[in-house]
Every structure is written in structure tokens, then in C-alpha cells.
Length: 254
Image 1 (cartoon, rainbow, N blue to C red):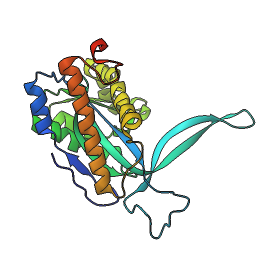
Image 2 (cartoon, rainbow, N blue to C red):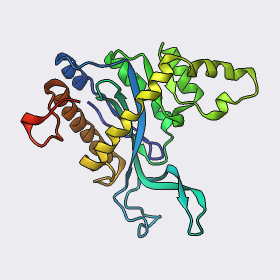
Image 3 (cartoon, rainbow, N blue to C red):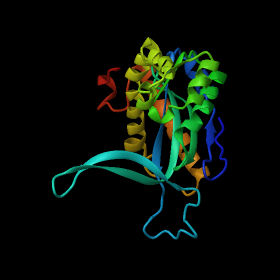
Image 4 (cartoon, rainbow, N blue to C red):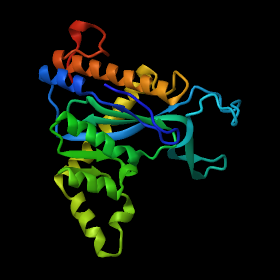
């Protein structure tokens, strides 16, 4: 397994879990045909109110977009506000059936998620996983990503932006046909699973905040967190015993 970094603006590290996937295959852990790709953000270990912009405490951290959220104003009206974070991102590919993380890259917070999609696909292709389709949210809806999956003989279950389906020309037909496929529909149904994995990583393993300074050290944190999550899942799949149970003897597999 290797974890490295690149340029600061959209630097990326890589997780190559061939040894992990090989080990769990020997234990007859089943991998399914659907991979789910998404990213999770981590707040930098800095106080942004006191941080000197000329000499930042974490020179690799960047401001990134978190989400749009509806809030109620003091006068009772609803408005949409954009939330931002200052830190880094972990880009993950997870097998929908086994819930095992099979690919991982890290970047600064301002990185575009879609840029890391093909790199994650390549990782799974090298591992020889029985992948047939990839699911992802609208942030990965880019023509190059759809084309790359088709080039690799894979189905795209990347959620489409509304403008693709509302075009007033003949180009929308290919997208309309895609959303009607079983692969697309099944991928959408499976996508929620990676959100659960991110919740576990943040709540139980502290991935919501960077423990160290710099992208390289953040990559180590993300990498080790993924190992722990995989080992926990491995125990559950092989023995039927989870780590959230009150006692060993009363645990049941999901």
C-alpha cells in the first residue's frame, strides 16, 4: 500500500489495497459488481480566525465547498446558504456489497471531486475486482468520467445533473436511455451506503478533523482510518460479530 502527495492546489495521495483485497478474498469475503465513489472532508487543525494568511499553519489546506443548506432567517423566511470548510478531502471508492474500501486518494479542500474518479477506477481494475458499474453523486457528472467507464467496458451510475436531461436537442437521448437502465437505478439505490461509512469514519475515528498539519500527514491519517474501517468490516463479514455490540456472545450480523 502506498500513500503519496502531489501539488498543493489539488494534490492527491493514492491507496493501493491489493494486499488487503487479496487477504479478504482468501477468507471468502464476497465483492459485488457495484462500486460507490464519493469524498469526505476534514477540517484543518487550525484556527482560521487567528491564522496568518501569509504564513498559514497548514500550507496545504484550502477552502472548499461543503453543501447548500436551507435555513430559516429571523423574519421567518427560508433561504439557501452555502457552507464552506477549510481543510482537506479524502476521495473513496467502496464496494457496495462488502462495504470494503478498495481505493483512496487525498487532496486539498478545493479539489474538484471528479478529477479523482478515473484514478480510483484504475486502482480497482488493477486489483481484478468483479466491478461492472460505478455509482457517484452529481459532482462526478462529467463527460470524461462517463466516457472513461464506457472505454473500460463499465456501466455508469453517476447521477446526472438536470441540464443533461432537459436539453432541447437530440443529445439528451443517450442520457435518457442511461437513466432507464437497471445498472443506473441499482447504483442510485446503493449510493447511501458510503455516507454511512463516512459517518463511522468521522464519529468513531475522528476523520472529521485533521490530526496533523500538512497534506502528507493527513494522507497517513486517512489511510490508517481506512485500514481500521476495513479490518472492522472484515471481522464482521467473516465472524458475524460487529464492534458496536454490547457483548461478544449477543452480536448478530446485519
